[in-house]
Image (cartoon, rainbow, N blue to C red; front, side, top):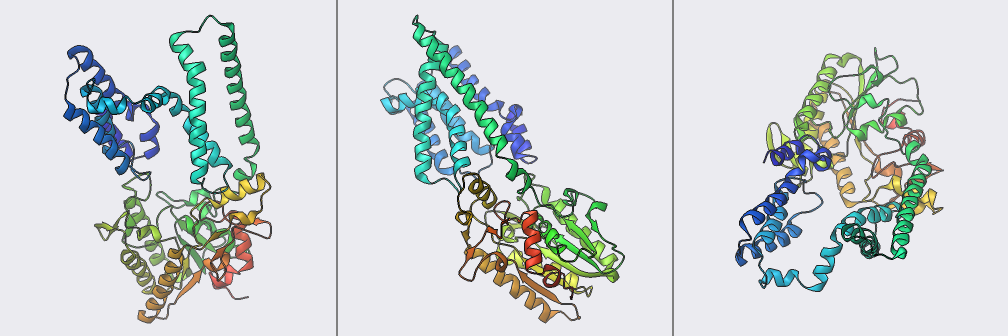
Length: 473
């Protein structure tokens, strides 16, 4: 029980730790061990109803559990309880027994452990060799290959180790040959991955702006200050989609004074934050605190601030699958909540008579564009294969942000203005065809963020110092 409740606690701290660390997963093993102890000590109780209910729980789990389901969690109880009920209550001749005793099911059961060991590396290899997301046909081929490898490893590894070798020298030699082959394959794969990771590590490195220290958890860093910030200061405020603009903003005018006040997964929306947008479900409070801190700095130094740049994808605040908190009230993510949060920030800045640039993000692809480009270079494939179509929600977002800026300018009672810049236009044509590579420059490092070189290239080409920072030549 303690391991189960620990896993629920860890889920709120780090999903990776909850998934991979033994203390948070051992309860799943102990449930099965407890069932074995019960059967060994008290015998196997018979109940067709309970065994059938266990099978239904397993089937229901396949329908209920998705890639977005936190794991381990209370949802994990469903398949665990289902399996325990099947193990405890299934008797010979019952309906569940007959279903699970058909030859294909028995065959899969025999290969299950080997299949479990093989399917992940096979699927990982397929994903590593695919420019975009693997197709259904590729995944089917991967499944068949996994079954073939599972049978080979069961036949020549698992069964000999469990039940002993035959007296034939041939079996021992074959076992040794397969072992050496597996070792060489693993070593070669590691060497290949290491040798081809140069582009991935250098060109596709995270783009944090002035410094990785500018992904601010609690306090400001001197590394996030550029130039003499005593007057005419530009503040970049937002999440990682604000960070990746900084190199482009400085590309044409290195004498700019700039402060980077950014935090990952934290849109510049006063009073609004995504409750479940990071590994820590309580991270929304640090986002709210961060935004209040930025606004407090601006209020205290408004005389020397010339422009505030607000940048974020914003769309995660409109996702109904997420929970957002708006002024202390939890609610479903929505476009209305997103709009209210942005308007709150704009109105507070307008009240300070500060000029603002609201930046619509570059479109986000459904696949990892940076990884696609890295693989295209490795496999000598045209980079145009990594281009993508403009998602419709980004057209809607750009329209909404433009309307928000116009609405704020109409309502403002002071001379401050809100400018709107749409980065979709920098990478996508009017027909909605979005480039990932231009003039030998890789623009995207992942699904939606610019590379460092890509940001500088676009900043120079589209004069971000004038369009976003509003400097005159």
